[in-house]
Image (tube, rainbow, N blue to C red; front, side, top):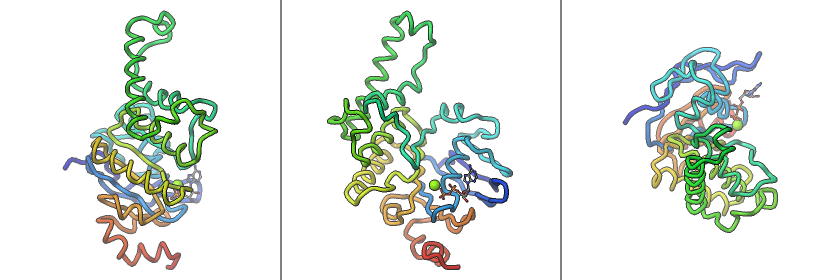
Length: 254
Ligand SMILES: Nc1ncnc2c1ncn2[C@@H]1O[C@H](COP(=O)(O)OP(=O)(O)O)[C@@H](O)[C@H]1O
Ligand SMILES: [Mg+2]
């Protein structure tokens, strides 16, 4: 299996806070790679380092064979990395379809003059974005909300739409920051099923943050456990649940 993302001794500091302490791991293409750990462990910081929003204080990150120090967030996104956020970041006064179209437009290419003239090329590109968006809407089973405004929709559906916008970018790697946060059991099961389908049917590498261990145990192929910026564990999710350091971190011991 080929590695598509590698962290090599990555540290990240914010003033006196060390969000990441000499973290190393490789992410295999095709994996469903989970990052778990309590609040403040450094999970979101890892995603922000992957997509280039944060630059490590020391160490190296390699993405698709390129040193990410030379890439800005847009360039990393264009390599095929898209994400969702811990807090929903959708345009609330727009419809589901329009929010997902924004994702699909990520790879639609035309300049402002061309779109002003509305040339044939623009029309073809528009149709392509529309097609991608409709496919995503079908896939996530949100047809009935297509023309609903975001702010009128239940939280669990909003989270699913945010997932849809990320999917519409047709990523190679999808970064999901607590996709089940704040959801009830039924919504959590639904989102877990969609994440599995994205991984298995669409073949997208998924990097999933969650602090709900159960969901991770059910669907991840590999897990890293974090606590206070340190990597406590890496391996099979079933072994993580038996690891004393992981158990202690979750119980707040040690
Ligand atoms: N932009 C930032 N500025 C200052 N401190 C930050 C910033 N981002 C994260 N941190 C700190 O880094 C640590 C790890 O945060 P984070 O990666 O968000 O953890 P998690 O996602 O596991 O809850 C925390 O102590 C947090 O306060
Ligand atoms: Mg976080």
